[in-house]
Length: 116
Image 1: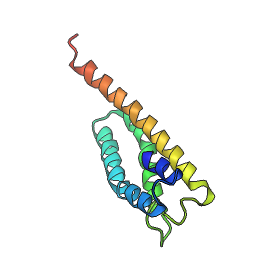
Image 2 (image 1 turned 135 degrees about the vertical axis):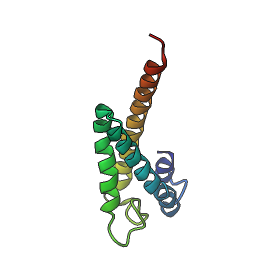
Image 3 (image 1 turned 90 degrees about the horizontal axis):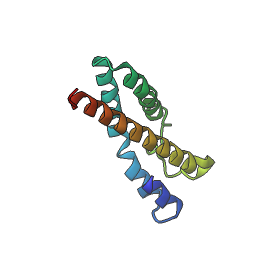
Image 4 (image 1 turned 180 degrees about the vertical axis):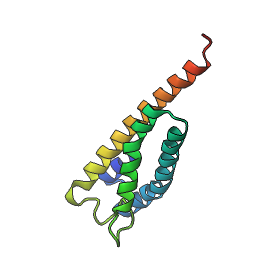
């Protein structure tokens, strides 16, 4: 979110912004896919179903990168067609999702550890 807002305010150029963001796309994809599969294996159905759409969206976004682009974030296209606003909106949604998951996992951890 910070990198995208820096680009929006012209503090950094599009190429450096996209290179910073693109280096985190694959680790995010792998991490989220691993967490989703672990939730399926451990039979935590609600959390699995909550994570499945986000993991699917990450995979879809990575697969649908046009050939010739630098990655999911492309410096030649980030200002075209409102992509900067949509990337910022997507980052905010993911931040909210990860905050929700953090508190759900924390609640589950405390409820399992707390004496009854």
